Image 1 (tube, rainbow, N blue to C red):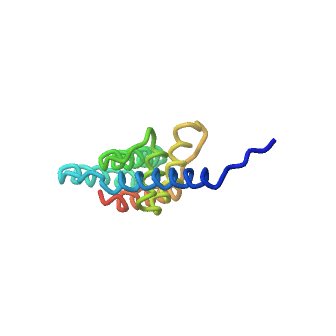
Image 2 (image 1 turned 180 degrees about the vertical axis):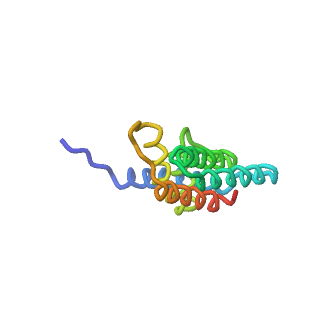
Image 3 (image 1 turned 90 degrees about the vertical axis):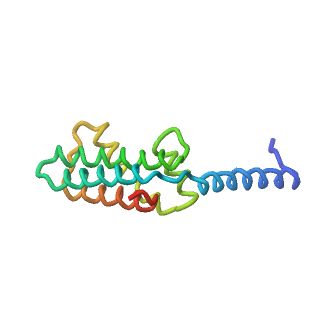
Length: 143
């Protein structure tokens, strides 16, 4: 038994999808203005992350990646980007600017640090992740 949709059913389905996407774009575009003090705090924290990356030893690189991930998520929240987690906020913001998706590999590195006890982070991988986090903050216009 197969179910077929009448042409009018396709119309309503397409209309529903268009309305949902339009609402998502509207909500992203009316994001909050960020207070100058908040921008200054983000820049201060970012400088600390870059300083951690310059230190020798893997533990400071791990902290830098985890702090950068938290800072990007804080940036999303500061802008009022909805979502229950980092991934949802990336997907939602990508309706406004698809280049934000480039932060996903950096977030995956953070997840490996947190969830895989034997994951070894080298400086090159840490630097690449930090670069991706920095690019995301610039896309959000908070850095």
